[in-house]
Length: 252
Image (cartoon, rainbow, N blue to C red; front, side, top):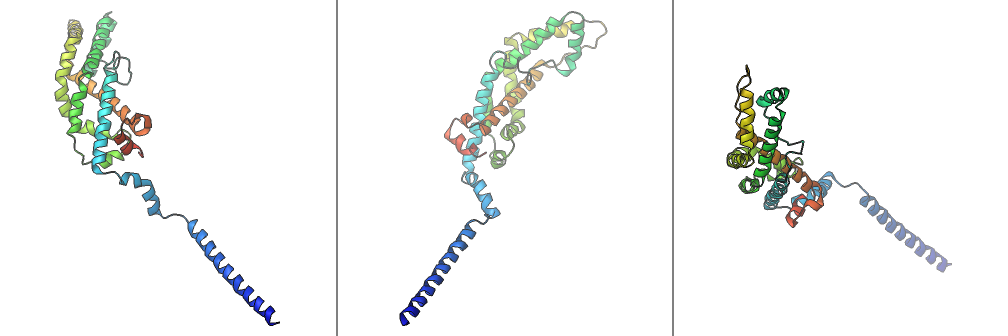
């Protein structure tokens, strides 16, 4: 009888210990299945970016822009790089659109076509020399807004470059455009166009600044193409051609 009582006592102790152990296990499971804190989520999302140094970001942005400029200007400098791209094709300036309409109406459309084609050929020729000018501007740009650019829109770096460097780039690029305009006979075609128009009776004579106009439109085209390249680097892993670009833009 004493033996039976002892066995029952041991059994109750064992059952209690087992219950206690199960309780611990259930408590652990409940804790592990609880939702992570907001700060934890943010840390997991931004952890890769926080591991980047300011130098990484600045160098990565400059490299991305340099790659974009190199690829963009190479494409634009090919035959029809400007002329057959509807987004950047150079047409007559606004003040000369009346010239186009008038000359076409009197059977002189070829003069207009020659002028438009030659302006685009000048832009394509000038694009060959654009990369060093842009890269120089990129190297000298401030890194103050580096993190904002990295976390900005798909073309934030290009937009920053456009805002900060358009004026010096225009000054540096205009002589290149003027050389190209002369090289492809754009100046001659333009002069023929304006001269023919100004000879028409009763029209108001005009003489728009061709080099200034083509310089502005060429720069706009290059910025547009660099923006496309930046989008590609941000979104397409295959466009990240170096370890630095993969590190900086891998989580963008």
